[in-house]
Length: 343
Length: 252
Image 1 (tube, helix red, strand yellow):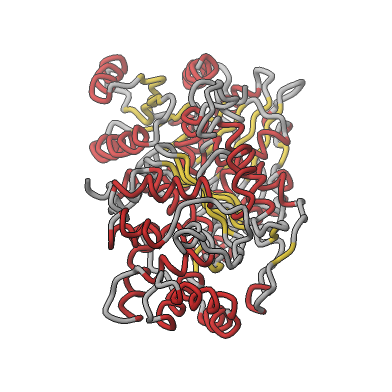
Image 2: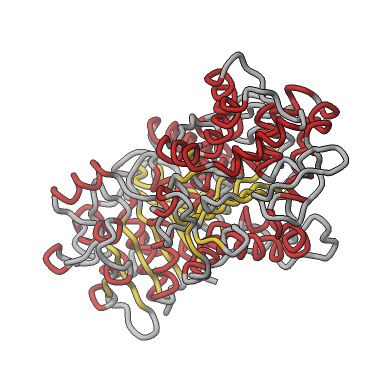
């Protein structure tokens, strides 16, 4: 498929402004702006610079419409959200069986930074905990560190449709203080689960976490997954279709750290959060949600982001296992049709 | 439910502002609460018809778009200026005629989301039954926005080749924006032309209803935008034609 024409693209940007769905998102944004639960991550000084009031909500549909409310252009570091997408690239590089031989796909119920490996197989539990993400980063192909990083950045560009940079101070801080991650890497090396280019792989892991994104990028990432791996705006393929289900099923079971069970029950959307304050959530075949608010709850998930996703899932019946008639019909709220018009 | 009516033409000088003022006043005279927004930021002018002088308008749409005031603060009650009484109300949100202000908005542009949210806010705050949007000729982001939100889009054209071609372009855009209802109005028609035949020809060419046909009028020229025609000459055939178009808007 080719890029959509300029008239359609500009018309889409205007109808996204006038759509009742944007009005709905604005109200959600207003509703949770006053929610000040949680704290900004401060384990490295750069993250503590985030302003608690930053708050953006973006929805991108699989037909390429973009709906924004709040600070959707504010950049922040992607952090753990990168893990889901790097997992996808590892699958493309090596295939399902090989990747699974290095990293399991079991939820842990442990914190994201726990040093736990599967006792029988020595594999880290899943690609969303730090140990599993490091083992996954180790699988990314490339002649050297630069080439591997370039491949990651190119992959993110395919998903979001724009170039991404690394926040260098965040990368250097993570690298300088990431003793725990370094320890995990060596533990896995001891068991032969990762290659011996430990420093290069850890650099790559710290770099992938320091990629700068905004709420719109997060919505575009998940909308691309929701659209079978094709960016709904640029129409470029970001990941082989066959691996989309691998990525989103691991997001569902492990994406929200040790709150994944509660999340699946309440929201029911495959999602991934990061300590930068982002959440990306996939409604397969329908849309992607991106939220950004740096106030984190005790489990490291964005407090406002969780609320926004809960409301969206409930109001539009987006929960994967929802069989009841939703309160609002998504298509009508996008188009303003069928009497949905909040004038 | 409140209705949004956008008045547009591809080319300039078709009589948009006159048309907007007359339709809005006709409906307000029927006891409705009507708002008019002049989104023609590069060349505002409709305030003249409502006898609102620039010295009286300390806040304009420009100030709202720069985040300096609420949209309600930029709305002026002009009911008395056009003889609207009783339950009927007529409000105008003017754009600034100061050259500095026009230059600033052209230079820095503005957030189209803010314009949209302002429309909605205005309708809610002033409890409007109708919101009329007067636009700048041609296509721009405010044109796209006003077309996308309107319940009724009125395209004005003169019987002129440039207008015919431009109207076709605007209709393509309107359809791309899923416009709900489109009406055509033919203005400044030469007195020797057969009005019914012209109406039929235009309807066939565009596949949309022609809501009214307005002959070129010396009386309108003579009024020279100092007041609303249908108030000054309520029994004139043009005023009757405006009432006919207003009726079609009310029935949508």
